[in-house]
Image 1 (cartoon, one colour):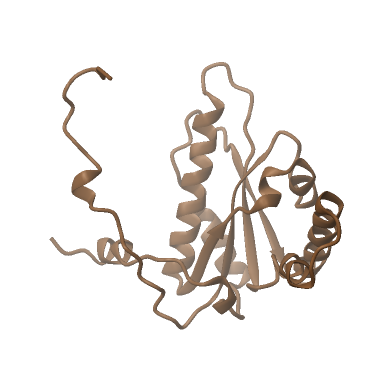
Image 2 (cartoon, helix red, strand yellow; image 1 turned 180 degrees about the vertical axis):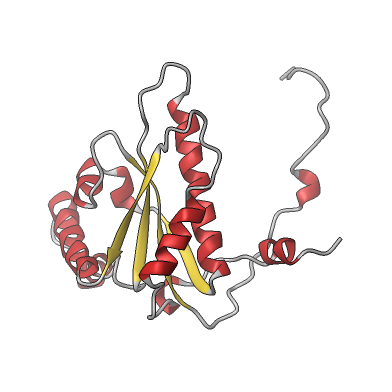
Length: 194
């Protein structure tokens, strides 16, 4: 069985964020990437996710705000740590935040909506890779912090699925050990008996 799509999926990997460089996807490419990202299972057609583009000078401003937030939480930061916070969103030319934005629904649980957001993130990554861009998705400390989420543009009820860093990438990507798929599945054998 050969398929260029399967071959592509079986070789997908993440690019190191510091090696992502300009140019980033164009506006038309971003529209295509987000269209692909939104073609995921979405029980009830709720669109329980959204995307935030961090690009241009906004990335530098976010870094300054993250450094300030980290210092408010932890006290004065060593220079290396401060520089790390300053560069969080400026290492790649484009960062797309994938945000879980659950909707009230009497039958569809919030966890299912969050999973739909995860699928949107994976489609986004795959679409960017298919257009020839490198990607890497992270969350980090500010994703689990109410002040950090607000600073990054999320409403109080929203949560971070991931921040996808995107840029041009010439490398082959670092291959890492992958799971033995044969150990990951089994045929159904009846109810769990602990």
